[in-house]
Length: 247
Length: 233
Image (cartoon, rainbow over all chains, first blue to last red; front, side, top):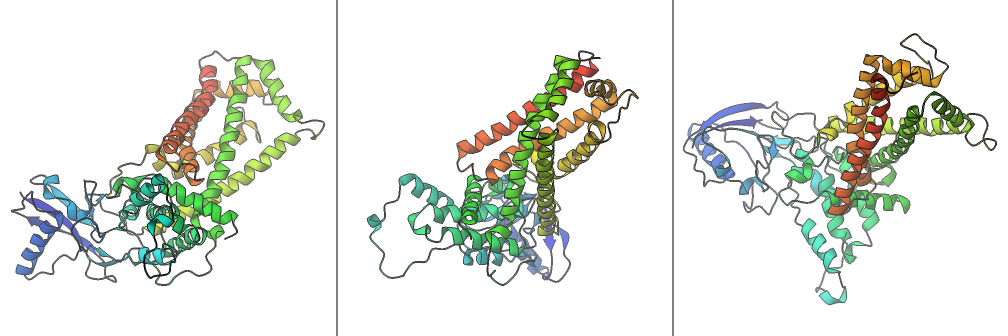
């Protein structure tokens, strides 16, 4: 099949970018979206042009590295990561618009690559539990209700890809924070730092320049791991609790 | 705007979620107020004397514990504080949202957001402008567009809505209110942390629908029935 690609090209963070159009022929529907871009890049290199820079790592949908805005949808038309999207989701002759995540907190490094370091700093600000390393404690010594364990595990599937921010009209990272706060806060080990965690993470989120949540729900629709909107309710609840506790 | 440093001395009260909390709390004050206001307006169906008696009763409510119009002024003070808080939080958060994405997408699809949720900011501005006109119309200025008397609440009401374009303005404003209530109710519940599971989320969204239809619908009955001639002098 043949597709027309409209891709954001930007040589570096300081330069102005623009959309460039490329025609790509001989695309197989069995190719993944990133393989299709690999083919484009081989063409570009053969012609002596600069290949399109994009992020990817595991290409198994579990690392959160890849992430592109495809025809106005984060990770494209399927509920999955960009690397797990295949060209069978498109038709011969389609025009595909590819843009980087757009958020001032995720500055463009080059072309389609953005710096998601803001997420790392949000995690550093509280998205962890402090435990002594060493031999693993006996698992049965801390009982966890099954429903809590299931919920913690479900939201722990967040891979920090940033699709929630990319899809949010306010550029908010509330779904990301909600997933982390719920994941750790559902478990006994997460309790001692529950207040300082939410306050630290939200303060870092705000300082990074992410927007506020308006509960619109674009984030959860874009999330490749289908993190539900109730984690944001949990995030808000935990912040109110911290407020009451004087943090 | 991304930083490279970690925030020190983080305070919960300075967070965007606290702004949202203020927005939700002030919004709940408005929801309770419009519910009571809508219910009171339905007195128009009981006729001239009953309606005017109700208007007078609002001024003597709480006497002799409260002075004449005391209850009304307490309510007005609460509403003004709620308005200042609501608008302040909306402006701060709106400003933040604009700066969170200074480079816009060439193509951006809406997948899950409701029509009402996308109209919160401009709809809110429309409601604010309407409230200013509404107060000039019935409270501060008492403007009778039909040129009739202004010191009789019931007659002012009938004269106003006998004018078709006034009814249209009020009905449009009620549509804006319905949209604001539809998303606002659910959003407030979520911000207050009350929707921590799928069922609570569905209930909060259903409550948004109910309040939007009951309040905006209830308000709309009076102008429609005046224009239809059912409520008349």
